[in-house]
Image (cartoon, rainbow, N blue to C red):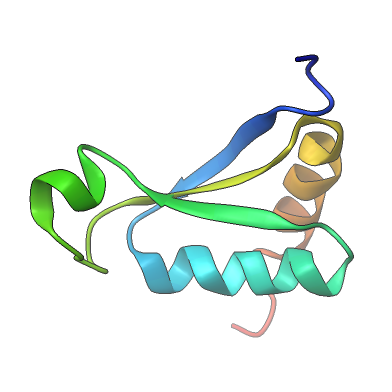
Length: 77
């Protein structure tokens, strides 16, 4: 499996809600993503939305996703 077709961690967010917000923003830009709990995840803690969650995209979308997040941070504040 090459870098372009494998999943890549874009960023870890402090909770599931923020990770899903950014997943929706990326989805609106045509970039599919996946949210995964960090630090043991569902197996260790059950379903806890308030643990850190990682946002993953296909490797070929990593740079674009990072640029979208960077450009969008702070808007609306």
